Length: 360
Image (cartoon, rainbow, N blue to C red; front, top):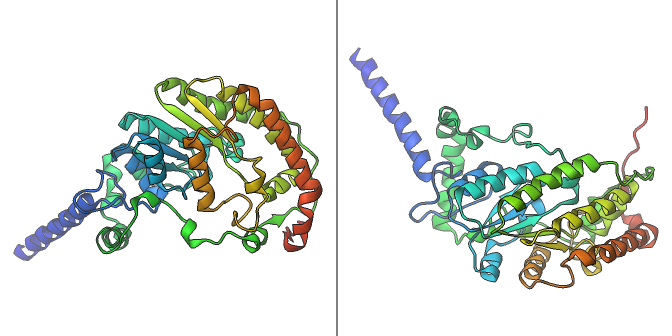
């Protein structure tokens, strides 16, 4: 019996030690922000984004999809005199991003929101997708009982904690590079054309109203944030997807939909005094430069991220869209989209692989 008692005491002490270590180091920031010499080592957005939003100190949020990950937070901090943090979902679904914004507004007084409005998000499901996409819900919900999945997790104990300690103590880790992946990628013609699988046939063009219900629902989510927080400045921008994306959009039959959706979105966004709206999709210097700017149809280099930040900070007239600018901007975009699919794509077709057409 004494032996059993000693074993049980030892087991309990070991469990307390393990749980205490996880709580103290807390690599997912589920309980607190970094303490002591530990840095904010943010490399796994599905696990760390929600905790950092709830516990870190900040007054600005960089919100968006994977194309927002290559911003350095310090660029915004220096340009706007703020302290920023990222709220990232890989595909930028509106409902997920607005969930993150809700958490941010609960936790802090937010001065600025820098919102990357991806075209695909306009027709995404207007409901959160965390559970369906396999996110660790024990980090998202408010149920302390399922924290055992975090406290007694061998990956956390033997991988995440040592990694966080190494980055904090042994390396000169830049906290501004949260979730950044651009330093490991190449952005050139071979990469972007090699990763583009072109549809062999052009689909019939969809009506511009095909996804009206989804666009309206997603815009309502964004507008609800804008209206609920009139003292927060929202910088909302459409990122510069490449000419390959426009070619793909045409071949999927969605060009007219996107042009109409962009117009309606900008018309709605420019109704609000606390919103600055920017449009980068028609910037020819960016979207036509496949030699330097892209690794695939839409993911651009960190240099473009820096350019976007600078444009937002400078109230850049070239990309900012006021109410009176919407019609000429969409007209210019329509002309460029047509030029891409009719002429500009032709020199690159020999480098592009076609999708294998499915047969019955």
